[in-house]
Amino acid sequence: MMMLQPAMLDGQGKKALERMRGRLVFCIFMMATLYMLLCGRLMDLGVSSVYHEQDTAATSNSLDATASLIQRADIVDRNGVLLASNLTTQSLYANPRVMIDKEDAIKKLSRTFPDLSPAFLRERFSARKNFVWLKRNLTPKEEMAVNNLGIPGLDFQAEQRRIYPQGDLFAHVLGYVGMDGHGLSGMEKTYDDQMLSDNKPVALTLDVRVQNSLKAELEQTIRKFRAIGASALVMDVNNGQILGLISLPDFNPNRFTKGDANGMFNRALSGVYEMGSTMKTINMAMALDSGRVHMGDSYDATNPIKIGRYQINDFHAQKRVLSVPEVFMYSSNIGSAKMALDVGAEAQQKFFKKAGLLKPIAIELPEKPHPLYPKQWTKTSAMTISFGHGIAVSPLHLISVISGLVNGGMMHQPTIIKHDEPLDSTRLVKARTSDSIRRLLRLVVTNGSGKNANVAGYLVGGKTGTAEKLGDGHYSKDARLSSFIGVFPINKPRYAVLVMVDEPKGLAESGGYATGGIVAAPAAGRIITQIAPMLGVEPVDENAPGVREAIRIDYEVKERKLASAQ
Image (tube, rainbow, N blue to C red; front, side):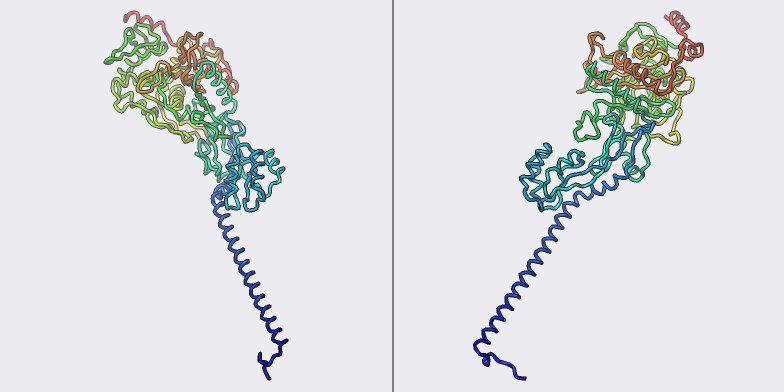
């Protein structure tokens, strides 16, 4: 077959061949261009994917936690009232790559959400990302407002939000959950793993009704005496269960980011304080249980005790010999100090250690402050510790020990969780010692500084305390802690109530005083009046023979004995 050579083509054949070559070159060019466009698009998609992965990586933990948070268990009070649960909400995000008019979007969004500043939105929208968070946990009204804006590039992500229906009522117990779905404080932190893995509600020992009573009374007391804060606890003395725990000021766990350090601080657990004369109850129990001090003994409180350039005085000075019950009733520092010396500093330290006052207290909350006490427990230390100076403990320490002193002598581990079985308990004092302490506590309320806590029919026993606060290396007469620890009914104790008020100011009607008997005891009395019926404690006839015998102390014998001793 004969092939045509270019030389053999005529003029028109050459032109046709040139056109074919041109078309072929154009096709090759177009194919190359299309190939390059496809490669560029693939690279763009790859880069976009990287950007998206980088951005979503920062939120993946949040989204993963959201999935876990769906299973986070509810928290309820002892009667099944809801304290913490989950709520499905929508969170707003943007895809800056598909937004058409970013400035218009900034204007509309900042007008809809004043907390989203134009500078913040501009920074968000300038990111080379497909995903940026704008606002988490919108309300239904806010979600509707965003939809009505009609801005391309905005969308929603369903999330779970931890909510606290009781607001700030249980703030210091429950704590709060962060944006990643994990507990950051309180019970939410302690039981974080359990509540994420087990959807069974966590039941507390606390009671919403008791909690409301505590808060209302503390708020009233703070306002009246212009205090900087207060705390209160209610404990079942027979099993260590806590029915109420309040610390003021507090915070709203639904908006925990707006809380300040003062509100976040848990005075009932996180702080340790010199609790003043309430600690005389522990010193008295130690002395009586040792067998070296008896109810029929007496101590000379005529003159102050001098220690170097300092001296120990009595606030309610009687300036005479006092029986052991009178030492407690008149809250004699002198008598308590001499009592501690009779027992000995070593024995006192050993008893305080046995009572758990020298170590952090066990409780199902993160706050476990360490008590403060002298490294060298000298005779001087023993004397000052006998009336509550020189040792600092938390209010939870104090109410736990007092509960163990009045219930027959068994100290229970405090708890805020309802358990199927009782927690550990240890014998603190003999039953006979416990009986004496109950009688002495009743004596303070009927004849001593605790009269303002007396509630007809409920046989309240208790002890007041007033302590100057230590600051800048010295005690301040203008800053004090006023407290009252009460137990009811004292013949058959069921509940202990502790009220502590931080830096109350004296009133004209109180003669300028702001002591525990003036500030804390009345609040405790009102609390007992409210919660006793809630807790099924029925009033009793205080003059019934059996009741009278259970709380009686024979003064006449001791007064005659004292007269002969003088």
